Length: 493
Image (cartoon, rainbow, N blue to C red; front, side):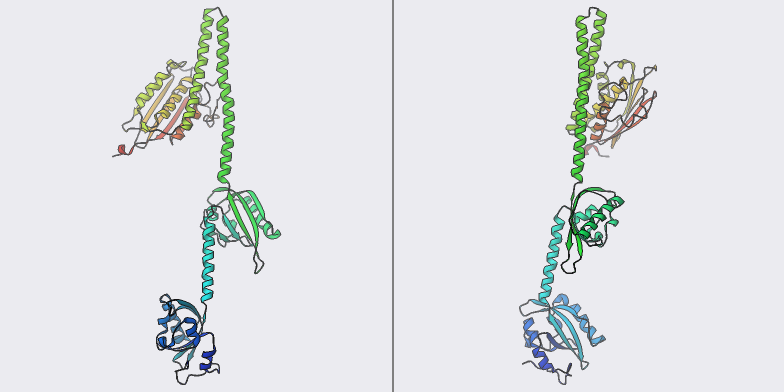
């Protein structure tokens, strides 16, 4: 039987506590200023699955979940010490099944300056629903963050309400840095921002989807992306407000690959055209000279035709060598071996000694290689063959002592190779173009037009650098630096 055991309790709003306790579905109890439960209504037992005899005259805190004890004690103390009514708060009450119920304590009243009358509601169902909603939201965030494409939700003002990690990466930011801000914070290009604004307004005003098939975005870090973005209107079922749901596909790599493919195709077309022309020219020359040899009776002229034919064969051979070097450099992996520069220079000099006018040029070299140097021997040989042959081809015939000076300095980190000649030099107008495929400064230029293109590609393959200093009729200096690929066992101090 439920009754008030506290004598002379004052009536609350003119209602007898015994009847009020028995008939209410709310949880009601009276505690003393020590925090002990003095009485409680049937709903307290029913809802919390408790037994009255087990908790009367025991501290209310004994029923509270351990994680909520401190918060509960603070609120009860506040009610007792500061006012007749306290702020509502929530906690968990342990049940006899060792489970717990969520309770919202909503009303407090001081009785006879020594007791507190408390009213609470069971909010367990609401809390479980909130937990399910929170779990669902968390899973939604997890799912959209797993999507590799940018996803976003904006309000009618264009401010971000929701973004996934891919959208944040697009702007080189964190997801939380986007929330509450619009695109003006993240898109630096005015024209790009204008297109975004216009498409957003179109979605809001006309309640229709908008497709931006090729959208350029440059963020504050200067990173440019090309996107295919679809935006659709999202109408709130409660207040009718319109938002924008957007999904983008990053086309940057695809477009870059397309551009590179187009460039490669253009280069291939140009390569085929130039190659066929440069192969045919010496062949036609040889055929013509052989015809002349057949019908020519003068021995001196025959010798002249034979010499010219030989020269065309050399041109053809050099062109084929360039093609071979170009193919090897682009396809083969870098192979590291110890380089003997003394043997390398001697080999290249001997190989090129039969070039026209090779005997006229003085090739000098200084090598400072106290440290061992490791790199790709075949590619290093390509560099030396090209620079030595160019010095021979483009020597200045108007001077008495044409020369090529080669200076090599090797350290543990790199090799610095300098090719300095006093040849015809390179005009300022051509210096930026000399590394282009098939570039020739004039029709009178020798060779295939591939030499320095191959040199540049080879140096890049070796992660090196090249620098040119040249003046017309004074000569050229090429400075090359190539990293030393020393094995670990050679890097001991």
